[in-house]
Amino acid sequence: MPRDTEAIERDIENARNQLAETLDVLAVRTNPKRLVETTKHNLLAKLNEPAVKAALIGAGTVVGLLVLRKIFR
Image (cartoon, rainbow, N blue to C red):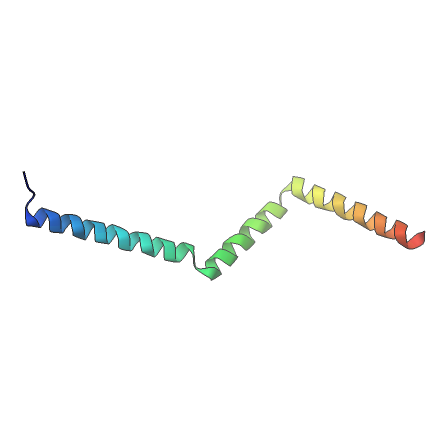
């Protein structure tokens, strides 16, 4: 049984509204300034984790000792 014109028009309008909402969300998510801020926030949060801090301190110490060893040899 064929659908009536009004039902088809409602479906098209609903699909159009959903597409507009999706495009709005994508525009916000892909905003370059927002991407930079989100990345910066995530990176700082990761660097503030104790395990990461300890690893960075350890790596820095090893590099520093190797540089000093190279200088004084």
